[in-house]
Image (tube, rainbow, N blue to C red):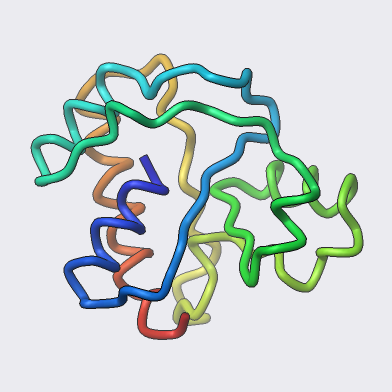
Length: 135
């Protein structure tokens, strides 16, 4: 969902020279987005039905300027296994966030209700809208 939200909001903002990619720390390759994720994105004006999951690979990290993680455990995992990229690894909820807001963790909605997917969607979207001007 996050990749789709980044792409959609970048397009709405007229940012054409950006690319976004999604990889999971424990993802199985070639799995489609859940039906709930697809539905929530459709409700918000874009389609992620062609999205397929991919495992985290260093070759793609080498090409990345920023690596955003949703949860601290994901951030620690990426930092531990890919220490050369430590300076590029950020929590989505804290990147250019107001220091008074504290850590804004975005929990993975996998296996949750449609209403949880909607809440997570809007949390990710708020962070993306805050971040895009800085990229």
